[in-house]
Picture 1 (spheres, rainbow, N blue to C red):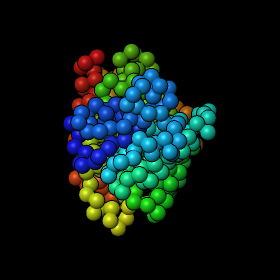
Picture 2 (cartoon, rainbow, N blue to C red):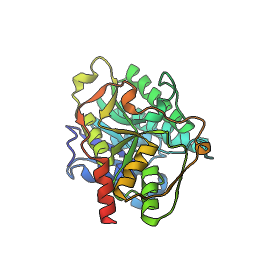
Picture 3 (tube, helix red, strand yellow):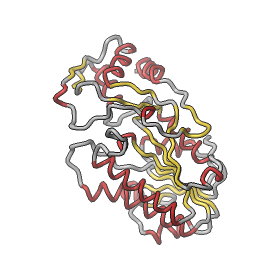
Picture 4 (cartoon, rainbow, N blue to C red):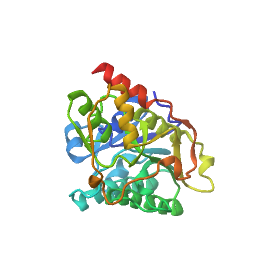
Amino acid sequence: MLDLGTWDLVVCTGSAGFLGRRVRQRIHPLQPVLEVQSPRRAAAHGDGVISSDVSVDQFAEHLSGRESILVLHLATRYVASGSTHDVADLLESNVAFPTRIVQAAISTSPRVRIVNPSSVFQYHGPNHDRPISLYAASKEAFRRILLGFTESSNLQVADLVLGDTFAEHDHRQKLIPYLVRCAASGLTARLGSGRQMMSLMHADDAVDAFAAAARVADVEFATDGFRTWEPVGSLTRTVGEVVAMIHNEFEGRPVCSFDASLDRPREMRIGIDQIGLPTLPGFVASRSFADTIRTIRRNG
C-alpha cells in the first residue's frame, strides 16, 4: 500500500491510465478516494467516478466538507511533436480540466496539495526554459497556472519533473514497448539518429515518487507554496544506448534501422539529471531497467 500521509480525501485523475492504474491499485482501501476520468470512462464506471468535463461548482460539490485534499494528477493528453491533433482538446485535457479541480479544491478546503507531473520536454533549449512541443507547452501552461494559484491561495504544489516511464506489460505506443515488440517478433525497428537523450524511470518508482511528494511536511511549503523537484534515480541514456541494453538481453534483437532524417527539428539532448533541479526529499528510485527488460524477455 502507498503511504500518502494524512489526507481527508485523495483525488486521483487519470486513474484508468498507465500510471493512474498503478496509483489507484496501491491506495489503501480505507482511504477516501475520488476518481476523475474522461467522460466516456466515467459514464462506463458509474458511481465513485466523476467526469473530467464537469464544472467547478460540480467538482466543489464532491470536495466540500474536507479539511484536507490531496490531488494526484495523473491524467494527461499526449501528442507527439509534429503530429496532427485537436488543439482545443489538448488544452481542455492538460490545462482547463485540472484547473477546474484546483479551483474547486481551494474553494472548499483549507489544506490542498497537488502532485503534478511535469515533463522533461518542458526543459528544452540552452537555458532549459523552452517547451519542445505543443504538448510540452500545454503542460507548462498548467504549471504556470499552478504557480499563480500559490501566489493567491492556500495551494501547495509538488511539481515532479519526469521523463519516460517503463514497466512490464506496457502496451503504450512508446519507444520501449515498441523496441520490445520488435525484439520479440523479429520486426525491424525504424528509428531516428539514436542520439536523442532519454530519462527512464520504472512506473512503480514514479508512483513511489508521487507518494513521497504527498508525504512531504507542510513546513517545506511554508515560504514557497510551489516546489519543483526531480525524483532521483532516472536512467539517462541516448536512444542508441537504450537499444544496446535491449540487444544485450534479447541476444542482438531487435534489428534497428537508424536514419537521422527521421529526427524532429527539436530533440532532447540532455537528461533530467543535467537540468540542475532540486531533488525530491526522501526518495531514490530503486528498480533497474536491465532487470525489467530481463524479466520481460523471460516471461515472454
